[in-house]
Figure 1 (cartoon, rainbow, N blue to C red):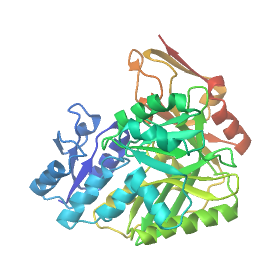
Figure 2: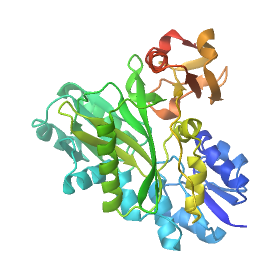
Figure 3: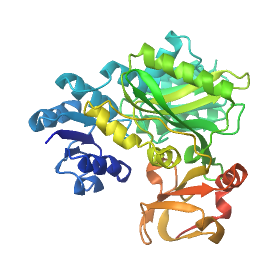
Figure 4: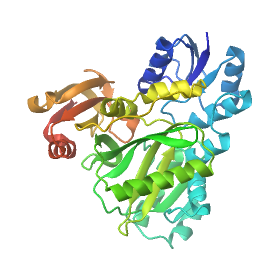
Length: 398
């Protein structure tokens, strides 16, 4: 029986473990949390941090694995590439994954290869910040170079908020580096997100989606995705061309990539993120509903060296979206109440929290209470629902 090592056993990563089991692979799991939910699904569990490259390599050698996956995990993606490279397993190069996985390295790559990028600077010490940002135009984005799920990311309007934002970002950075960049004003309502999938060096699957935020709770953390994406054919073609150029330059062979893209007021394309892993918040599940393509299966099979994967699909006429259930305050969850009309549109519900559980203010994807998936009859109905969540869902927290 072939063995696969999976890095991360959170609730959102369980589908990858479940698929690997169903496909007949022996599943080995690494996670630093001794009580992670994924261990119940894996054949074998090691309480090892997925960012500890040498410790994970030791597990991989001991178990004689045939493939390794960091499903929907930014921090673990470089580890997976490092281990695979050391053991000669299917993988993209460690250098390519590092370039995409760290914001500072990715911005330098964009700069060197003449892609558009915001004016930016990387800092380790706040004493170096003030003088440098005098030449920057506010508002500014302050981010850890290496965090995931929007943790530690802040938009600031003046230098008065700089130190607080810097400390918040530094706290969330494993490498203790903060990137500060000028804020890009987009010329379209929704940020463009979603996943693409590369096979044999070519992007063979495009799953672009509209990204939604709750401006009343936290304008920087995504609360959902919707399909079809609101962009012109010309812009879609430009996105395809520039993402493929990144794939070519980094000699990427295969895998799922999570995208964050926008066009500024001049119509120039900015690739904000191209994370070297499948999207979180169950994006592959949403795309499977839309297209019938199983990106979880594709990710696992490609990591095991099986590249005979069919990623073709016909565009679905329906309107689909996902929504992260969240709250604007800390406390004990008493109830989640959906409007009756909206309840009828729900096609799948995945809950992380139940009544009586402690819940927290939504400042990162890890604070979601659950995810619901919808199917609508029109674009207008879908976007109106996604933009006005406070009208159809009530989260009771005490």
